[in-house]
Amino acid sequence: MALLGGFAYLLYLVMTGGKLSVPGPMAGDRPILWLALQAIAVATVAAAAVTAAAVARARQAGPRGERVRLGLLVAGGVVFVPWALYWGLLLP
Image (tube, rainbow, N blue to C red; front, side):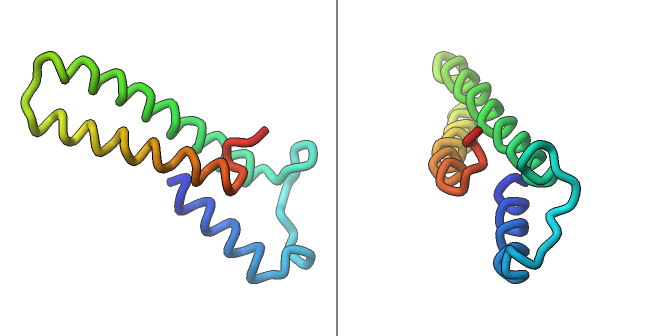
């Protein structure tokens, strides 16, 4: 969700020139939509951390398919963090 929302918001800004667009309601110096995307990005990282803890538990006892599934989810979370930092989703 954060990935698609981030791309959609950035595409909207690029297509409208950024200067001509009305970002909507603001909270401080940021649009509410951008703050919502940042909250979703933080929730995504938190979910990846919880999944990493589940991988540690599943490693001790659990079917191989479960470990692979959880490992892929953690890998997606690890790839998401640098992407979100690059686009400013995880920056204050």
